[in-house]
Length: 227
Image (cartoon, rainbow, N blue to C red):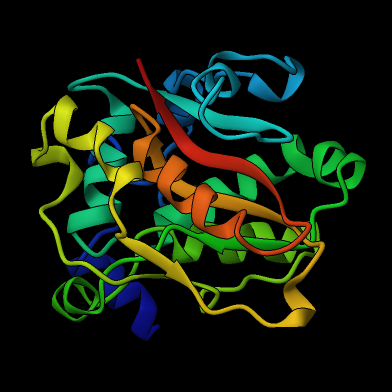
């Protein structure tokens, strides 16, 4: 009864188009789910995400779930996830994406899921890392541990959306990230996750730090791919 009253005065709306959610719909409406462009990267070994890292960092596989277009549904979802506190978006997309990753993580023996970290100052300001719910959903469905302590961001910088291409390309050359690993982390295959793959510079910088771990292997998965 109480929940019905809450829904009456504060109706649930779609995080993509802001239309009222119908019975059985959760966070994202059926129409938005249908309209969101999937990449199908999991079906193509040398896909456009994988190619981003040619000659930069060795990755076992790289996959993104959705295409990110300016003023599109996916952009709106990422904005709400990243800046509006709508963390359930990450869970829903993780639930949806996980079946695409099942065969890949089994084939490549992925050991842990590692999120691109926020600087502690930004984490305190925002209150959450936007990929946490996404990563924990993948962890639950794929039965792979989620580890948000292995990789750290030690330098505070402006958000990537405000950086130009030149500054982004310099990320991998700067000591922005660090890892505090133990012998138990040796020989592991890490699945590095983020919200959007654009130039790949942030993921490249993170991957290069993780590859300092003896015997480490890296793969990459993101919610969206921006052309």
